[in-house]
Image (tube, rainbow, N blue to C red):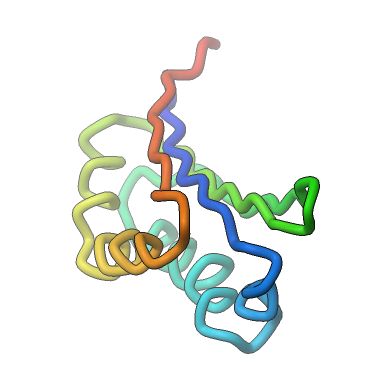
Length: 104
């Protein structure tokens, strides 16, 4: 079985420009975290989803799938990932990190 780790956070409408291409949040969320995952043994796949909420806020969900839980933990404890998730605390709602086991 595989494991999926999601990180979900809200970007307020007034700060939406921060998720546009070329900005730090975009680079970290779309490329940085996935780059770390791709260099972690056991990474299977991952991606980023964005949904516009009422009022113009954006909900961002980053998902990463790994073959084993210890490999996912190695990813989660990488300094770049920890720094990125700590930076998300600057937004009004704290990031929500969840781990799921897939059924196959």
